[in-house]
Length: 122
Image (tube, rainbow, N blue to C red; front, side, top):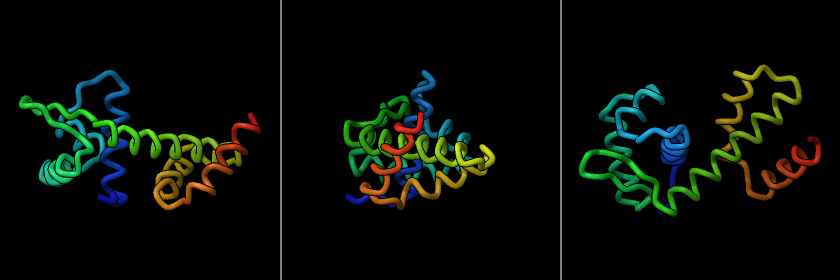
């Protein structure tokens, strides 16, 4: 199943929340993303059906191996693109917002070149 941008955003959010040491539930995702609980419930069902996440009987969400791979990839893209834009003088809030738009559409080849450039520049 090919994930759409929204699915990638949900996985990235679950990843970020779990990295903060929190157990993640649908309500946490809704609050973090500013979405309604019904919207998040629908997305959680789709991600669960696609085997990107598991949901415990208590409602705790865990990324599967495939979910983690997608989430880590998107998070890395977001972080590196944000750093690049900030390094170019873009306001940090604008840089983060723009990186969020770019991270889903950029090709693997272009991102690899950007990543190499950013790492070389440090």
